[in-house]
Length: 187
Ligand code: ZN
Image 1 (cartoon, protein in one colour):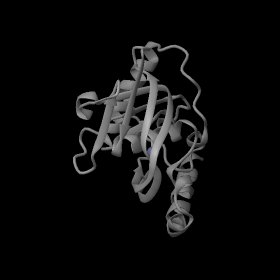
Image 2 (cartoon, protein in one colour):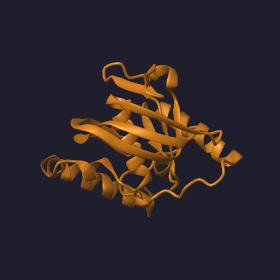
Image 3 (cartoon, helix red, strand yellow):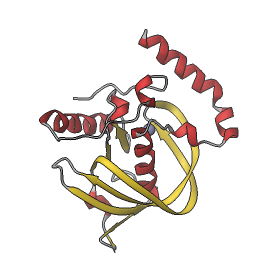
Image 4 (cartoon, helix red, strand yellow):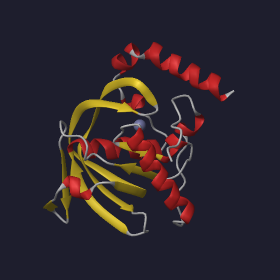
């Protein structure tokens, strides 16, 4: 079942996610529903905040994107990104590294709004999977961008917070309109 994705202006998007202490059947079910929701919306990532839950949980799948490459390293060896997808990250800890690169980003909570965001090119990730097992990997390219974007959500940080002031200024009206519509719907 596809869940409703909350939009900019919904307070939960600003909440830091609580760590998941135990992977219950409810969490497993939530993960399944988050994947269904992400695929239905044609996104490459979705955080729990975006379906209204402030938890340290996000899902990612970059395998459908072929015009923006990703890299993956497992135990220091280059690996096949698509074979590693999809990813469920529970209580993720990340260490971005490498040079800063600017690239376009959107967000399912900001329909039709895009902007260039500067992030580090690579990221080292440690998280639990849906079976509660810890796993680690290093990645680059689109996957590293997606991981950083989603982990920001888990901390209540949105991509517009990382936009250049000038770019954000150009989107000001659209952002205010979206926020106003969202708040009106919440009443
Ligand atoms: Zn997002």
